[in-house]
Image (spheres, rainbow, N blue to C red):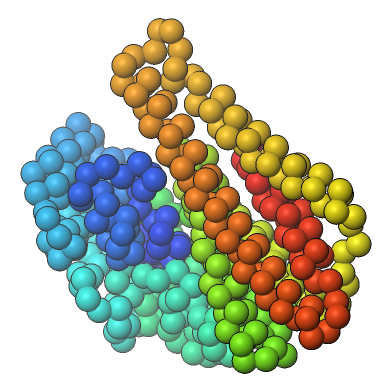
Length: 439
């Protein structure tokens, strides 16, 4: 077996693309930053370069030289680009340079193949070829991940194992060898693979995910009948891998949700089904805006992507439960008009409290001794958050309106009172979603 490279660079590429950039996209100001945040491939490249740069700093005896080189590249190369093609070429070239600096001299791994600005097609490589960054883009849309988790296709461990093997993704090769998924169960071979990986990239052995894999391998070598290893439950300890897992969970939930919501739509008349499709589109828009609102509450840190996914999943889960209760189980709410009015007031109060809490959290920038730049940052952050919160609230109100229109049409034919029930349930869910903040 050839040398194996850890998935770290590819790992960030497995994160949800919207949040893969190394900086806060909510604060993107320049044309280059906006281009990066608006292009999933560029976002992935930016994150991969950030990780490689950090490891280059760790290994360099002249850290100032590394820092200065990166600053000059950003100023003279990256920021001189005017379009995505130029940025893609610049990032590909810089990534190869930095990865050379970040690799152990005795175990230098080949730099990743260039990522094109137009193609996501997977290429086939031999078992001895180090991983190619471009082949690991796409998060839960990645073919290896799809086959392993059954996203958009039936779970196929044989296909997934071969895919991960071709791309030398050490984490999943070890995992699947321990579990006997797509390949015979062989703890000793998993240990050999792990040892080769850690020899090729010593830094990986001290990472939290590396430690988790080491423990899992040791347990299975000692007792081959140990329970199956679940990547997200047993091995994902870094914020990067947790971000990957939240992305997988989000896609699986969306897939399961889509099946159940389509089944509900099939029970409607054609006009009602058309309205239902509008409702589902409005729900997705609201979910994404809620994710943006939560994202804004995190100024930095890779956990931001996890929080974003979690909020979207919360919104979708609440909607799925509401739809099932009302349209499938016909469990209708019995609140009085006054109680529903009180519920609406509680929602408005929660909305204002959330904004007030954000403003208070940013107040450290607006002290009497704060600099002019900090005060300006404070004003911008507050204005941006208020706008994001308002957009999310408006999207929710549009969702509630469309859902009420659909329910009213059904009420005419069935003599029910779905409108009142749906409005109350949706409002209760909205209160919980507003309050679901990092604090």
